[in-house]
Image 1: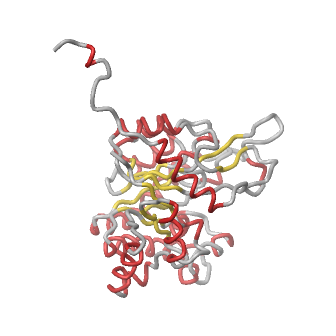
Image 2: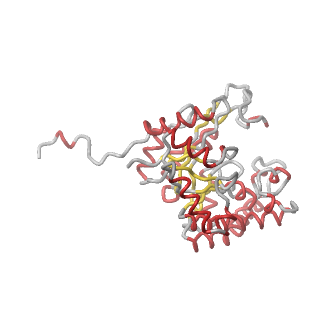
Length: 332
């Protein structure tokens, strides 16, 4: 069971798809998880022109690459967020529009539904992304939270996502929420609550990224075991805690890479994620999908890191045993 190793293109959107595909093939990747920004995958073009998806597949095939998932994180973030000026910087102009918050959320929901349609046209059955959250800003309960309002936040997410998931189901595509701070689900408890609020619809699952668990002192392997039937896709990224009594786990409103942060993202194998245990858990739940490198490390050249990451995964991932190790010691 050699799981495919892919590269998520979101952090490489400054490069053309042709340029990145050539590099990824040279580094040894099996495919790309295409971000729906830059020129990597254009949802509107995929729906308007059947030739676009054929040409896109041909572009990947010329480099010996496949695609098994799309990434729609940026528009997904705006579906349930309180909208502010930061969203203008990540959204397509036609989704931002005049910036009126409810209009932005509506257009983001429409674009996410269109992403399912475009994925189906492209021959892909999985879209990863974010949901945003109407309650993340209430993480620290002061002034004291109205916890009924927090509960209504889960209901709001379910209401906003219901018509989106209707389209996903019509198209035979599944959505994978990247469980992540700033989303409606960011740990074990909030994931349980989110799945329950959505009625555990099969079209809504999880893109498991272990780097978002390490800074919270959570175990991504145990998360995989608890939510095994919902692990639809896996990102490979690492995080390193640097908590020495002076640095804060809240990261002090500092940019990634600042030495005064209490934690940071690092290239796979350079942080606190126990990938051996994670891969054992993935084997236990029968996950055979891609291992998609989401490369983020402010202290390392990305080309060097991306090449090293695929070598790391070829060495670290393993097939489960199909024999009992002591069976050969017994007489027939």
